[in-house]
Amino acid sequence: MLGGSPWLQLIIFIIPFALKTFSPYVWMDFLYFGDLLRILVTYGARRRRRPLFFVLDRFLEQTVACPDKLFIAFGDERHTYADADRKSNKIARALQSQAGYTSGDTVALFMGNEPTFVFTWLALAKLGSPVALLNYNIRTKSLLHCFNCCKAKVLVAASGLEAVEDVLPSLIEQGVVVLLMTKHCDTSGIQSFLDKVEEAPDSPLPRSLRSHLSFKSPAVYIYTSGTTGLPKAALVNQNRLLTALAILSSNGVTSKDVMYTNLPLYHTAGFFVGFIGPIETGSTIVLKRKFSASQFWDDCRKYNVTVVQYIGEVMRYLCCTPKRDNDKDHKVRLAIGNGIRAEVWKEFLNRFGNVQIREFYASTEGNIGFLNYPGKMGAVGRVHFLHQKLFPYTLVKYDTERDEPVRDANGLCIKSPKGETGLLVSKITDIAPFEGYAQNKEQTERKKLRDVLKKGDLYFNTGDLMRIDKDNFIYFQDRVGDTFRWKGENVATTEVSDILSFIDCLQEANVYGVQVPGHEGRVGMAAVSLKEDGEFDGSKVYKHVVSYLPSYARPRFIRIQSAVEVTGTFKQMKVKLVAQGFDPGQVQDPLYFLDDCVKSYVPVTAQLYSSILSGSIKL
Ligand SMILES: *[C@@H]1O[C@H](CO)[C@@H](O)[C@H](O)[C@H]1NC(C)=O
View (cartoon, rainbow, N blue to C red):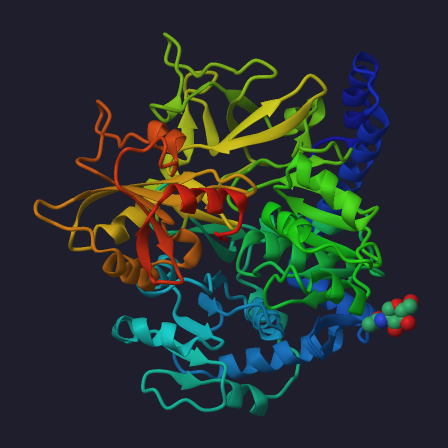
């Protein structure tokens, strides 16, 4: 990865840099470079090992070094490293004797946060099988789509039988083996699997089962809602997973730490930070089925948690819980995550005491990341010369109305000056590759941007608008195009539009996200037009939306237009709609709100509007 002597390179890069930009952060920069170097050296040494060294091998090392160390605490369950090793052996053995499965086949995992998720993943790693991490909330068409994009031969599901039954006919038609983690199952086409696991031996699996793997082999597929359409399976290869090991160790986490993992393991944040990171450090994972703001600190006290992970929403919810006398009574020293706003950051420290916050920027499939190691409130990271040398990225001017980068007379992008917002793009190179999406060439191409600074160059388009300040801190500003984030999930507007278009009375739907004071991200809203002599039936629309969309993706507001406006190039107009939001004072069209209490869309009145703004109606 790094040719020549890394020390020499570092010195050559760092000295002029340090002298030129002597700033209060320079020592932090030095320390950070030290860490970066240590990571690179460890990584380089692992890459040279034969037989090849994967994340699983790090887990096996930990199992040998500290077999009796607590690996996972889940409710009252306790599993040591050795337990997890044995349990995953049993699952692997049971799978080996499963008709329809051959080791190395891709397997889809449809499970929420529970120890079995971890054991099954380890089992599949032992069998050399790539694992598709299905989002546990998705249903019907999306579920089937996600399953199909990674060409899995087997589906292992925890519970949620209903969701599997919905798509069972299609799975059976494709000859998929469907295994359920229960001891009995009467549904034809679904086999119980737990009974087989319990009978299987727990002897270790031979390494030869993984001999076909290289660093380029797919390790996991993680689903992301990108700019358009149904979720896409981002391919995480073995090399990428190996680099993810450093996530916690590079932030000073050690084997003495106890990590609180409460984000979904099927997403990058939960999987990388909450699961892969602790394997490297040999820490204990306190696994939580679901994030709960009211139980968060009690859990931290109960399990002596020292490190927590977050997304912006988590921190805001925690700050919104009623104040308690024991708010500062805990051992949490580090919070690591992404998306905390400056005002929430400040409030969090006030409320919960001296917790170090490590904010970073990264995406599942992206090839660029930042770390805010100096802890500057509001920033997602710090940019500097060396980092940019290794990972050439730049901010380019972006036209939000046309939804594309601004080009000059030569057809090249224009760099955004310091202090101005621009689209973050990162050059695709050998050390910063973009693996793309499984079975989706078109979407993979859409994330690539050509002719950025030179004719013929190739960049990864992050879809994120960022700004760099004079002290070289980088700030997240907004997402572009056809996605928005709500409750920590990305929502693809076209996917929601597609679902709305099945509703009888609707002609067309234009979906976008609008900001609500006091909330992270954007809440879903749709501007729709009705069919000729169609009538808007609030409860019918409600029923459809609730049965086909996960709660975070449901449009909470609908405005009815006589026709959906399009631009000259027939792109749907969004900027004006987004700006007007759901304010009945600004929107002349009929305006509706998704009301879960009455199970219908109800008209937005001035009173309803102010209740939403004041927070007395929860979104
Ligand atoms: C937490 O720490 C306290 C004091 O150090 C100790 O008494 C207690 O047993 C620990 N609890 C757990 C669950 O490790």
